[in-house]
Image (cartoon, rainbow, N blue to C red):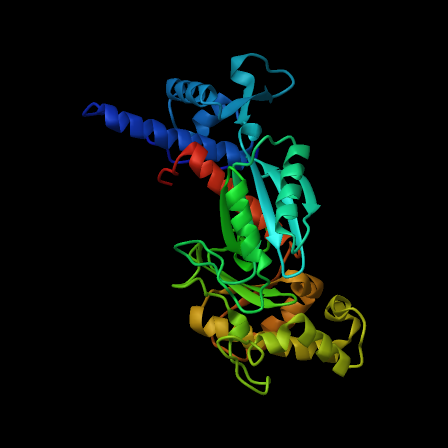
Length: 393
């Protein structure tokens, strides 16, 4: 367990005596606080919970009893080889209380991960594409292989715009129809909550929690792969926009494309400069025709990397001028391939294009970021249902 500052708990008021309703609210807040600490810090003893929450020993004893009887926590071991007895018992969240599924659905592939309530992966497999019923069959079989009798929450990461209110995947031009059919089949066949989120938003969640942007309050993630996308996190919150279109940076008009994008085609936008095909063409112009990831990693030479950084800086500078996030993360397959070297080149070029100070970082997660974000989102959603809404910080 890492050292942390004691968390803020709701402590009993000296006077007047709390009403039954306020006592119930206090218990709910403290229970949620304890569960959050067990999630973030790992198994804890009752004494450690007392220290971290600031609650009295009797209050912690009552809390542990309530959560144990509710099937939310259990004894998972003892603290220290020399310590025995009740005070040494380590309590942890019951990981098998609910099972989750995370899906990364791309234009030509789909991958699923089954996880427990703590978000820990238990099994992973590719799903058949353009074969919706077979894909759901495979997901159900994967869940059984992982020991899950039923799934509680499923989070699907997919390209395209997701409506903020309805949560529906938009009919985005260029996306195969089986994406939406798969979501419909999951909702029809599974006794689970099925949530759809834009894949780049999920990658940003992963970078924020366990990646390059950990503990960064505001940043924009640029996803660089077959397509180009962005995710906007400001003041710790993901921003989707009025229609779910925040981050559709592929449509951003930029110089050097020879045209302008349209409502249905991003060929004249930022996509035309930094998508996988565009980067491969740029490498070919510099005499390199090998794998594009190797080109971005440095195999195509310094002039190519300078030219690519120039292109990426256009998008990063536009983001900085409008949002002032303070940080841009280069993610996706190409962001990972370029690493810190490419990020540093882009950062230097950005300083010449905008007065807004903007750090540029390389992803530490790369391609698995979407699945990682989907697991985290599924864990958060399931715990919100099972543990109740979070109390005040």
